[in-house]
Image (cartoon, rainbow, N blue to C red; front, side, top):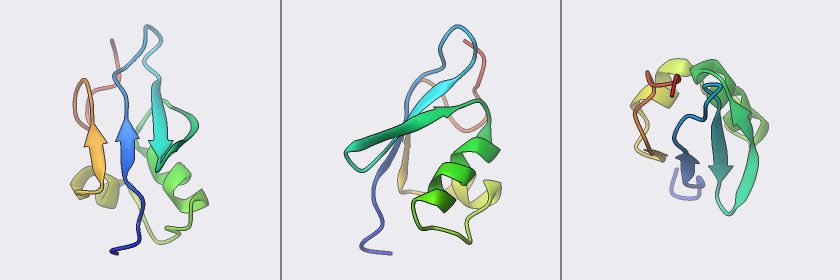
Length: 71
């Protein structure tokens, strides 16, 4: 896990979406924790699910944690 990238989830926008950055690259907009898990799976963490996302220390949640999606 030492080589896993840092993930930043930005504050929710007006429509509830949150920008996702993995390492130094923006990968998309998530509208729920399942979307974050999908972005991480695409980045090489195939065995991750929503529980891993909610508990991970790799993820920096800005503007609210994994349960905050509406602005």
